[in-house]
Amino acid sequence: MNQDHGYREAMSGRDSSPAIMWFRQDLRLADNPALLASAAGGRPVVCLYVLDEAGEGDWPAGGASRWWLHMSLAALAESLERLGQRLVLRRGPALAALREVVSETGAGAVVWNRRYEPAAATRDARVKAELKAAGVAAESFNAALLFEPWTIRTGGGGPYKVFTPFWRACLGAPAPPAPLAPPASIAAPPAWPAGEALDDWRLLPRAPDWAGGLRRAWTPGEAGAQARLQRFLSEGLEGYAAARDRPDLPATSRLSPHLHFGEIGPRQVFAAVQALGAGSPGAEKFLQELGWREFCHHLLFHFPALPAANFRAEFDAFPWADDPAGLDAWRRGRTGYPIVDAGMAELWTTGWMHNRVRMIAASFLIKHLLIDWRQGEAWFWDTLVDADLANNAASWQWVAGGGADAAPYFRIFNPVAQGEKFDPNGTYVRRWVPELARLPAAWLHKPWDAPAAVLAGAGVRLGTDYPRPIVDHAKARKRALDAFAAMKDRPGAA
DNA sequence: TTTTGAGTTGTTCGA
DNA sequence: GTCGAACAACTCAAA
View 1 (cartoon, chains in turn green, cyan, blue):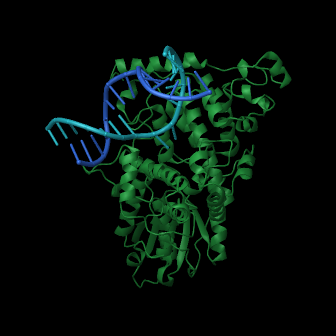
View 2 (cartoon, chains in turn green, blue, cyan):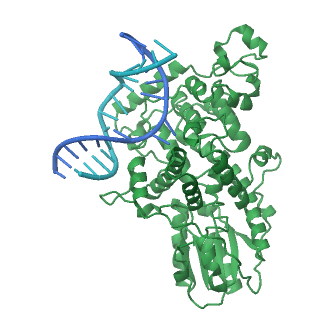
View 3 (cartoon, chains in turn purple, orange, cyan):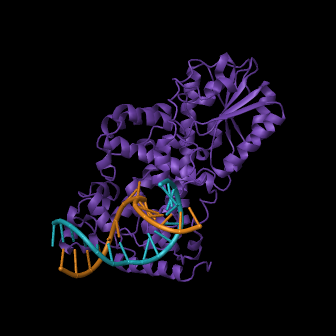
């Protein structure tokens, strides 16, 4: 732990009043610079989480995220209790809640780790200014990114819009500091401020409880994140470059929700991967995926309209279809294309979808159904446990073809070819579309082409047990290319 | 200022 | 089955 991230300077005063550690998307003890800063010098610490839904702007947490947040807060509270600490819960506008806790505890400082989404960053800037104006020390730190968005700039001084030069610049910049150890101890305050009960926040679904699949698939919390990392390092990293596109194999890290909630930090992942496999193809490829996460945050920070507006304004003229039935079929995994439906079922059941299948499913919504990418973005936001404003917005824009760095519009995934290539034995489809489980692999990705006897033998009645394709691939492809041509014919005609 | 090389992840068609 | 070309220019980033 050769770097201190500046926390000693920040908190070097001899003030013996409590410091408030304001937890947000950094729900961990290790590599948490704000937490170390709050506890420095044995200063008493009040650990606080504020549920500030209005502070998230247009993007309050979706259903799956709320489930994860509950589980993660419970895990963090337990970890803190083992240190003789508590996690105090409040809800409401963050500034008001912080002021109350400052007043109740006599705290002289508030510290937190930075967020970069437009609404949160704007709120945090105001919080910092108001606290300082009230005579309370306020300091923020970086726990969430390897390279903060303003530290990476092109030769011209602007932000990057293309991934490859961005990541090259990152790798040429000063290396991220080594991860910090968790605090050995955190002094308790003389008295605890009152807190709300986590259960009262109703973050968990009830009537119906649809979270059974999430509980089976995930272990939210810092320990769960570490276990996931260790397992990936031992079982996944070496073969990652080759197997990462295979949704039928357990080849990816599945760290995305843990990273989103800050149960593990990118510096910890970066250091562990480098220590194990520096220079190997698997490590390079995996670090590049961390790089994409960095790039998405870079884009959102510099282009705050990213979640709602086309990155390229000419896409404002795109003739999106109004197709509620198609959108509904896509959401429910009833498109008739097995790889798409399998992905949507995996998402609905586990709150997660393999990256390759996300691209296929997103491409299908946008290009086969011509439905506005923002509809897909909203559905993912509600259903993904790793829903992250930067990653979600940038990825949907990328698939839609609206970014400078995006897939060319004529690159339209063929869901049959993609399924056969990346789920060659049909294992993934069989798992998530059990109606088709007994169909031979040769027909699994195109059941409508299977001979009647094969379908009957597999117990599949098309149109009854499993839908026929809601669009014909070749026709849909042509329609999408025509729509793209139409958009280009009337530039700026929004 | 101009030039130049490059840009995550594909598909289809015809030889 | 395999291979190369066409698909479409356009913007970005750096020299």
